[in-house]
Image (cartoon, rainbow, N blue to C red):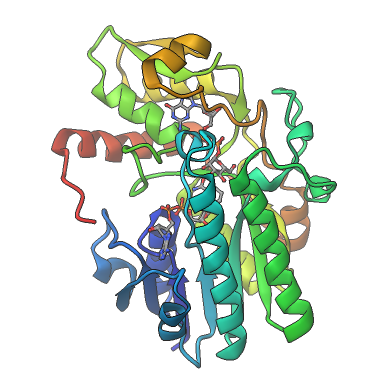
Length: 338
Ligand code: NAD
Ligand code: GDD
């Protein structure tokens, strides 16, 4: 039986990844600072260790000797409302960097077979993402570096960290740059949620005939990848000889207003969109409207070429599945057991 460790498996993508690995017949150990809020642990792992991975002693305890594959997804992260306000920069940089420093070192010490690291499209330079209709997120465009957030800078640093452990200590690494990933069992409320979950929550909570708020002018663009396709892409990268860094995302770029309209359409409700920005936003929320880059889309040429597979689920289908889950959460308003 192959053995895997999923760090950050108490979170959204890590939970889905643990489930997939368990279904594939792996022994799965998860470590996270919190329990999974939406998956029963027996569905996603054999062992769950609740610990703080910024502590090297915890990482020493979690990573065992004969681990075949380690997936490093633990990070201090969230959507635009968390990483672009500037208020969480120190924690984001410190906590995520500490985790990655600990994990890289301990993985070498324990001779882990292969390590997967989840970087982010937020590491791409801001200057290539100013035009909403023509963003450039080709892997080769990463340098000269100019990410628009500290979160992006930390991801860039940690990519380099894992690759330097590969060069100097022979650690077998795979690095993917996730674009915006969405789906059920993900954060949908509380301030760390990303746009797809936020749109769906607002739609689910809105009265028929009402309106939902979209931050900014709604013309900024993104692409959104459904979580099971993300997990499949990770598994295929892990099985391949290609180390990356490589994008994992969708190429179906939409504006934020189009995303909001899809959320409305899948709900079947009659709702309108209200764009809130500038002073109006600041007065209402007490901080500047967190917008991030103007345009972003995944470029999957390299993944297709190296792995020979591509994601295919239409955004609308993923949004429907996510709507069904989030609307049931809204109805139940379950208290979180963190
Ligand atoms: P998530 O927040 O749901 O999962 C991250 C997990 O890390 C959380 O469960 C959190 O509790 C855990 N964690 C944070 N600090 C910890 C600590 N000190 N010790 C132990 N655990 C800790 O996020 P996600 O969406 O599942 O993202 C997983 C990974 O993918 C992250 O590294 C994230 O930066 C990256 N990523 C995600 C997206 C996306 O759209 N979801 C996009 C780009 C990159
Ligand atoms: N979160 C959120 N909530 N964003 C909104 C909302 C809302 O209610 N309304 C509009 N937006 C806009 C944001 O202002 C931003 O311009 C855009 O939607 C996308 O926001 P997010 O989905 O929160 O984040 P992101 O795409 O800028 O960054 C995400 O993807 C990266 C990878 O591509 C984050 O998840 C990052 O952590 C991740 O690395």
